Length: 192
Image 1: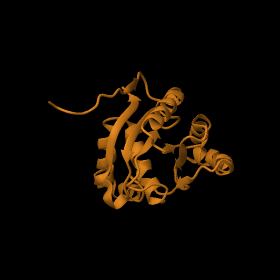
Image 2: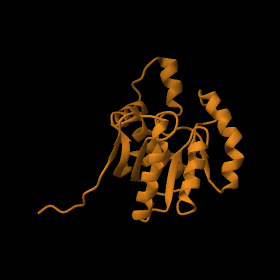
Image 3: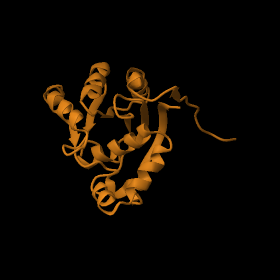
Image 4: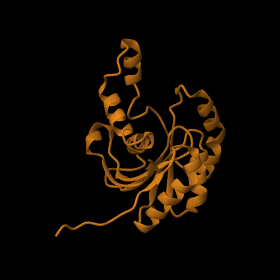
C-alpha cells in the first residue's frame, strides 16, 4: 500500500495581478497550517510584499525580492524605490541583486546573440509550468544568497507573471552553487 498525503492545487483561469489576493490568502493559509514561518515574495514595485505583510498580520515573516537596480524595467524600479522606506519601516527584509536565473548570462545572450545558455535552459524549463514557478524558484535562491533563508528552511514562495502574484510554492531554498538541489515540495496555486 502506497503512503503519502493528498493535497489540492488551486488553478487560476488566467495569469496576472487579478489573482494576487487569492494567491496570498492561499500561501498564508498553508504557511499557518504547515507551521512555516517565512514567505518569500517577488514584488517588482513593493506593493505585493506590503499587501502580504498586511494580510500576514505578523504571523509570517515576509521577505521581499525585487528587480535588480539595473533592471530594464525602469518604471518598476522607480516605483520600488518610492516604496522602499515603507517596506523597511515594517521590518520587511529586501533582496535586490542579480537574478538567480539570468543575471550576467543576459550579457552573453545579447553579445553573442544566443539563447542557449545554461541558466536560460533552467528558466525556460520552469516556465513550462508557469512564469510564476520560475520566479518562485529564483527568489528562493536569491533570498538564500542574501542570508535571509537557508537550505534548512522550508519556505512558501510567491511569484507572478510580471505584476501581482499568481503562483505559490512550498520549497526548500538553496544557494546558487547548489541550484539543482532545490526541492519544490508543494504547488499551492498557479495559472492553468
